[in-house]
Image 1 (tube, rainbow, N blue to C red):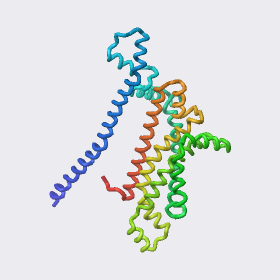
Image 2: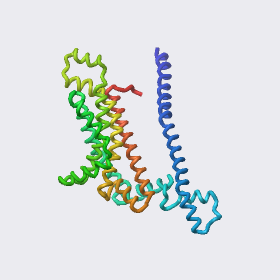
Image 3: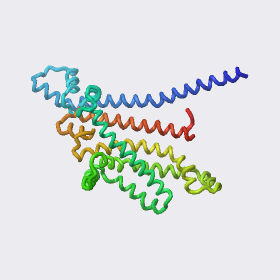
Image 4: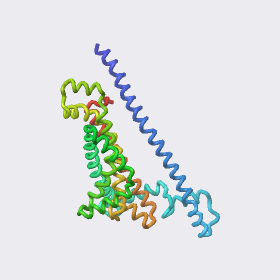
Length: 314
């Protein structure tokens, strides 16, 4: 009997490990392929866009006997290119993160921490607001018909038009600093949470709702024991969208204020002085931060869903 157990157990374990490796490859390989394609397109675009200026540089230096290699190399080593090449941006990110002190005003880590603090606060406020609105919409038919259209309409207003008004109004009542930027992030991030939670709270099967009525469960008991647990996968999916949008909102909020710190401030300073490499390094840093936040929310969601028994153990 032990022999049968061992012989039957080993193949299952091996198959599980193989399936995990296959799942990892199926999710990792496409990302790497897409990233390589993006880098190649980026390099090609940098050569094309920087080519006219490099030809003019050779012309002014009376250098007409240049090779294609020299021309292409020149387009990727300009001080203020139209489009910096990936390695130029990578070098700038390295210099402003590793080689600079965190407290330095030229450190991307310092500026990222400023933007990240307002983005996370706005994301937390937006998530809380979205959950509250979703509960009100699901449990009140009047609010479902009256509030939901306004929630959707709020997202049709360009954030660049709303941000200055929010900042001016809040400054008028004495609210400055972190909160105005957080409110703008909240304005952008609450919408996907509302939509996801409304879908999630309405996701339980009719049979499950009937079962709760059979047990004479109250509305509160149905909410906590049925609706809320089944809405968690929808909530974490919407939170992944919301946290990325909150990052965008925090950067946009720094633009009309003339901020001296934050990734938005780096973008402004780079545009004022024509430092395109600085602009792109700030954009890349913002993308990396947003990706890190999304991955973090995804891991937390998988852990919670697994503990709640909403996903199968892999």
